[in-house]
Length: 311
Image (cartoon, rainbow, N blue to C red; front, side, top):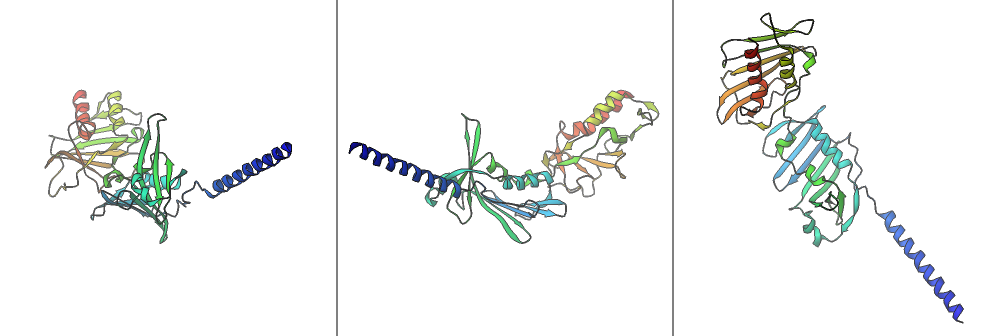
């Protein structure tokens, strides 16, 4: 009798174990780590609305533009727009944290505490998410972001710094390029303007030797200057400046093998609240503020030091 009871008890325990596995397996199958499926090639607009306002990225042919919700519009850095789309497409959930709306505020995924991200394409809504707070685990050196799909109760935990991708301001998406010049392609450099007594023209001959007015220049010095022109980016936008009737203090023309027209860079001095303001033909809608140690040092002061040293 005891053996019979033990056998029955064993059967019941096995049955309970198998039932638990089935239930767990069913739960795992129902949980989809892909919060959304996004065709990145179709996305043509992303609207991000948070506590600090609304930022909108809109595809403009092969480029992107950014708006701040207050009537300001500018070219967007293509890689920044693509980064936002990539962040949306790669969202993978670790787990569901809660399904209770009462807990939304804890994870900052309410309509007032989170950042709503809406991606559209061809007139259809492709994604509508509420991006919540970010938590960093010092012990594991890892981050977790919290996400809720609009119209649903579930709050998901997502690996990484997702929330930081969508809480950026208008200027962080703008194209900060002043110029991008390959030193090996440069054929000539000409500096002129109201801030100097004459013009300086540096020309490279067929043998790669640089000269100014027929006088050879130190090749290492010229190469060092040109290396500074490889990636010229502004830091602060001078949106309040426009050169109405004002001539640039300095104007640099860079002729290259790759472009039909020279890259034209202007530097304005005594520009109101800005010590120097830079503008270029590469990014004509943007004006950048500089002090004496930023763009001015790289583009103008270093050029003047170069020609003064070799005279």
